[in-house]
Length: 392
Image (cartoon, rainbow, N blue to C red; front, side):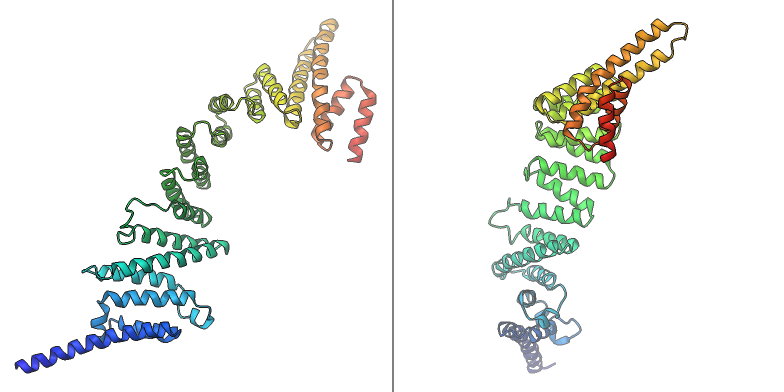
């Protein structure tokens, strides 16, 4: 081939490349003029791999940067017709800016792309919040994850390599949880705990997420890790105790309950819970002491009064069984044991009456009082409580 022919072919190639780059400029001009449909059409033509004329622009970083700008404009437009140009324009913009950096071997466009990234984060944040409020949690999660990917890109984080956006990371966990993507929720929540974000509450969220997976081992592990870092946190202790209680591991629950009381010795709920545990263990004296302690710190504690009354009531019932087991030829012994039962029933009355005062509509309390009054021949009070039950 003659030299002139080679030069002519080279000239054609260069001219074609400039022509395609000119289309990029045209696409940008359309975008600036608000003609987004033409902008999209023009920019897509420049990256059409099946178009031989696109060779010069498809490998040019600026092409992809402009493409990102155009699709961001599609997201931002108020024109409903333009919004129909793409159903996920910010993802197109996101992919385009990353493609621009991939092709930018000479690092000529990093500064301008970084600016575009900053603007894109703003749009993605708005999209994520809107999607979350609309309960489109999958879309919200995707947007939060894209923000995190941008923020971890070396070009974006060059000024502060150690920066971590814990707010976005936490929100990603929240969106994942609501999307029932529990593994991702745990992943993002756990990452935020490394930066102490949201304190002990995040460990509670991790535990709750494990519970949604019916993984009590994972839930318990998260709570125990939280207690290592926040040993005096009451809600974490309560969650641990509840897991043990639900698993019927009374001794383990008691261990953590005693820790909770040690950290918060005036918390009536802890004493009440300890009373119920002692009740389960049939340690009546310790249960009584704990319920009384609960009342000491909260004098309107209905459940504590009721359980105390029930404790004495049940002791009376057991004593009646002892009395009834005595042979009929031992009437004095029977009376002795029966009187012991009546003594327990009498102890139950003031606590049941206080419980009834605190919650006059509770049927169980009223039934207990009716039985107690009848057994102890307190007939006036028995008639009164029967009348109340009729009117309930």
